[in-house]
Each structure stands twice: as structure tokens, then as C-alpha cells.
Length: 159
Image 1 (tube, rainbow, N blue to C red):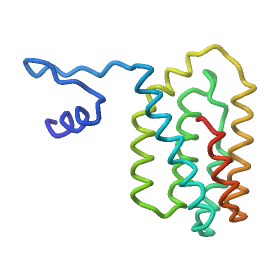
Image 2 (cartoon, rainbow, N blue to C red; image 1 turned 90 degrees about the vertical axis):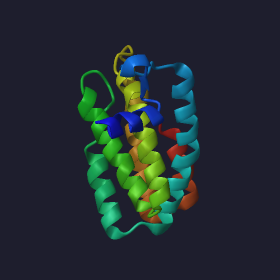
Image 3 (cartoon, one colour; image 1 turned 60 degrees about the horizontal axis):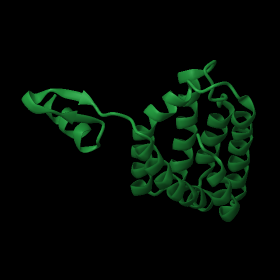
């Protein structure tokens, strides 16, 4: 238990206060922005590497994952968030760069609480539906081995 609390504290997800009280760290817009900025810089690299290093098994996994995507809305909630994370994990794995995969998985873990907060935003399915189309385009670009367009397309996706 101590090790888990120490790890969560080192990742900034909990704070350990006096007398060993542990509280979930407050969410703030600065942290959300910083997490997004780092992911924005790493996602294109993962997409570019995936387009050049992917295997047939990687493509099959990405195609399966992209078919499971749902709009990230209140209606689909946690199921949609999980499907998006699985999709991105298949893309990251196709990069075959274990350091990059670990960094991006960590970013997703730290960003999940902000994504869940986003489910509370007012409805507006148009941008969210557009993002589904962009995910399908990214799979196709990766399948074709088009690394520069795959990298560029990954920047457009925000989920």
C-alpha cells in the first residue's frame, strides 16, 4: 500500500499531507494543458513510427480497435473513453518503441480524469463524430505506410 501511495504521489495524482493523510490531487487547467502539449508532441512520432514499423498483426489490431470507437459523449461515457484508449494503445504498440509506448500510456493515465470531466460538457456531437473519421483515416494511412501523413493526421485527433 505504501509503495502504491508513493508512486501515485510521485506522479502527482495524490498528495500526502501531515499525519499521513492522502488526498487526490486537485485538477487544474495548467496540468491538463501541459499533459495535452506533451501528448501533442509525442503522438505524431508514434504515428510516424507505426506507419513504418507496423506488422500485419498491428494493422489487424488497429482495424479492430477503430471499429469499436464510439463518440465521446455522456451517452457512451466510460465505454467510449475506454475504446479510444485501446485504439491509441494499438497505434502506440505498432511503433515498436517501448520507451515511447510507456510515456504515452503514462500520459493517458494522467489525462483520464480530465477526459472524464469532459463527459460533463454540453452535448455537441459534430466535432466528436469528426474525430472518429480522423481515427479511421489514421488507420488507413498507417496501413499504407504513409508516415508523414499519419503523423500529421495524429495531430488532429484530440481524444
